[in-house]
Amino acid sequence: MPTPEVATPEAPPLPDAAGRGAPPLSTLSIREKAAQLVMPWIGGEYWASDNAAMQAALQLAHDQGVGGFVVGVGASPYDLAAKLNALQRAAPLPLLIAADLESGPAMRIRGGTAFPGNMALGATGRELDAYQVGRVTAVEAQAVGIHWVFAPVVDVNNDPANPIINTRSFGEDPRRVAVLGAAFLRGVEEHGLMATAKHFPGHGDTGVDSHLSLPLISGDRARLDTVELVPFRAAVRAGVDAVMSGHLAVPAITGADGPPATLSAAVMDTLLRGALGFRGLVVTDALSMGAIVSRYGAAQAAVLAFEAGADVLLMPADAPTAIDAVAAAVESGAIPESRLDASVARLFAAKTRAGLWDRRGVDLRAIAGIVGTTADWTLAQDIARRSVVLVRDSLRMVPLGPERRHRIVVAAFGDDGASGIGATFIQTLRSGADTVHAFRLYPASGPASYDSVRAAAAGAGAVIVVASPRPAAWRPDAVSVPPALAALVEEMARAGQPVVFVSLGSPYVLAQLPRVPAFLVAWNSTDPTERAAAQALLGLAPISGHLPVSLPPLYPLGAGLERGAPQDPRP
Image: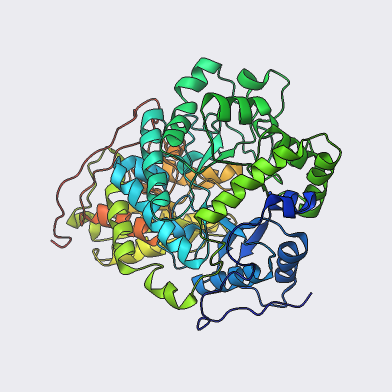
């Protein structure tokens, strides 16, 4: 197959080579229609046209005829847009491109606007914030060739031990999650993209990562109706375009020995389409995840998910195998062709709404005026400032007075993939403090590194420990603080030292730090949130956020110490 030419920033918008309008379903073979259901994953980083991964993606688009792709973490917006334009050129039919932009454009587009995440929106409590994040996400994603946002997460995070939802949720109050989720999806859909409510019927009340194994949702039907399903009903009422299934055991719906929700018609058809009245696209969570792949192969998982009610088979373990299996099931009569036609018709309708029959590609020349604009970053900074929550301040240290700003010691912990955590925080602190001694700690840091922090902390006006515990696929420990770091904080707290722990992520780590005198949450480690956390400590911005989750036994839902107007950082 000849390699399609990759667009340059000067290339004109890419016209649709197949002409205007969706083809009649009768002109497509069963396998061609089955291929439209399949959406493999591709990396978002730069790929040369002869790169092996690019060639594999082109083969999926051209030879296999897949319906679209889901994009991973990207390089520059230009690299991502050029790659997607090249794939659109290769495909016989337009590709629907999706991305997990749960916390905004920067989650997948490097240089995109970096928002503080869903739980931060829960901390501000403002519908308009959620709407604005959805709006900016849609506008910036569309500029690089993305048509479908796998967001918002409307799971109700009511299990502090949840290792994979956590701060991806708006909070633990079903009604607030419903309101904020609906506002986010309206922001997305009113600005030209498709939104997705996930992970149906609700992934919040579990302590298991479904990337690894199958979580159990043990509540009865009444519990589901009053907690998990509340935000999904609100999303359906708000007109959400798509719903993503969760790989969850839900015995209240499927019975004790029933299949995972993704593979259950009782969940995906009877409950979602029947009881909730949903008429849009149903997309599976990734079929390559451990909760599915450990029990079902690529072929069986694809057929069972389709049979249960899915329209889009996301990231099967082997895309050609999944296509062949669905086609074989239809050709054998095991699944009616009319069922396949219904899903393809919904997909074609989505491509029509995205304008893909008229124009597939994007104009790279327009990107710089749309992605990561100053106005959008200013909005992100404003939301980040208002989302900061001061949970505890038993020594009344925050904001740091002149005597505490005279000499500050900062210990920033980052894992191997996030070694830059705390850089913006430290830089901002230095702009308003006399002396800042900064230390970096890593998972491999030994006793000598921790001893260096202990020695420097003696006599400091304030000791600030910064970490970013956050949900990460296949890493359930990522939402906690490493034991050595927690032990250091507790040791200094017992000694009466003025310790502030700043969580750039999960608020639940407070349970590991019962004696820490001050605990501040700023939700993620993007530049705006790190800057907001430092400004809050320096008294350069008021603190007004409130917990969207409870931290038993001391801090209920809505807790948060407020601090007033900004003050001069210098004595």
